[in-house]
Amino acid sequence: MSTIDYSEKIPNNVNLGEDRALQRALEQWQPNFLNWWGDVGPEGSTDFEVYLRTAVSVDPQGWAQFGHTKMRDYRWGIFLNPGDAERKIHFGDHKGEKAWQDVPGEHRANLRRIIVTQGDTEPASVEQQRHLGLTCPSQYDLRNLFQVNVEEGRHLWAMVYLLHKHFGRDGREEAEALLERRSGDENNPRILGAFNEKTPDWLAFFMFTYFTDRDGKFQLCALAESAFDPLARTTKFMLTEEAHHMFVGESGVSRVIARTAQKMNELKTDDVGLLRAAGVIDLPTIQRYVNFHYSVTIDLFGADQSSNAAIFYSSGLKGRFEEGKRDDDHLLKGRTYKVIEAQGGQLVEKEVPMLNALNEVLRDDFIKDSVAGVGRWNKVLEKAGLPHRLAVPHKAFHRNIGALSGVKVSPDGRVVSEAEWQANVDQWLPSAADRAFVAGLMGRVVEPGKFANWIAPPVMGINRQPVDFDYVRFN
Ligand SMILES: [Fe+2]
Ligand SMILES: [Fe+2]
Image (cartoon, rainbow, N blue to C red; front, top):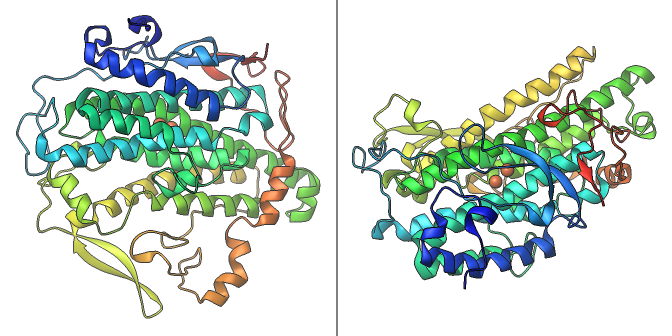
């Protein structure tokens, strides 16, 4: 009956071959996954052999095996970080009790919702990035795009494994629904807003992997603290892969800036028209892309005050970023946190119970982390001897969730009128003209070692291969 050789086709450390119920569930789900990948995964890539990293175990030697692999033969594995049989819950009302190996009945609905929401983002980003291979700026970048795509596919497997293993029939239905929703679909969209936005060009892709995959990092870090041990161990392993996605974003934007800075010096100008005529992306456009991706990403953390966030924490389902490193009581009852709201045309801070503000706490941790990388982008400008600097906009800018949704706020944090917003929005967010200009730069460059005009080559290749290595064989 079995059509899948589990140890071969699905590398795993969860004894897949010995769990009949799980096997049956996956045997039904796997062909649907492959159909989904064929329909809305990376366009035209089926026959490409790509220099990909495949995880075959969680130890340092096994989790990053590099080699040319046909995209459709990629082995999406299922891995949990090694467990600690004595692990204790270290926050919330169950603090000090043993971590759960199974789902407690009273937390079942909330845990399922958390896993489905996380799981939904993984295929969504693959769908959003589907067309980018057609306009890649180099083989190196094309390989990185595909690496991110296959690993997001693996992250979907990771969440589907939890659903199949621990949630019975409901879990199987949710696993099917994860393949049925579509990014941007009017009738059946992905769950979270940013995952229904388009990723129309490579600057958007780099911004997405820098900011939005970093949202993934913070969500996964919070879930890695979970009292539900299989979730904690799964997300810990996902984090090892996520680091590369953020690297792709940070280094990608950095290379765009480096190329622009080079042209600015060559032409001794910061004139947008002249730089665009020279085929590079002007800094004001890059800044508007930062403003857009930053603001839609910080919305992903949810409402600034949320009773669900309090329940998820107190019941041990979702911790804070680096929960174990914080020296408080890990219960947070009676503590407060500052959130922002608009009052009488001003942004004001307001103290609220911290338990209800845990989305905001995680958002602020994300902000600290993402600002650091923007500082590194500015170093590129500094090194080039240019006075220009990029910055993230104010936290209240362009928000669509929580108390700030609908309040018009400028990037520097002033509440503005609808008229002022309309008069300036094209300076603050990418305009149709910006998008059209960037789209016009996108053309496919695939000769080994060649790069599109608008982006600098990377400092080094992948896995110590040369920059002009044949990362993709097109067959
Ligand atoms: Fe992911
Ligand atoms: Fe990712």
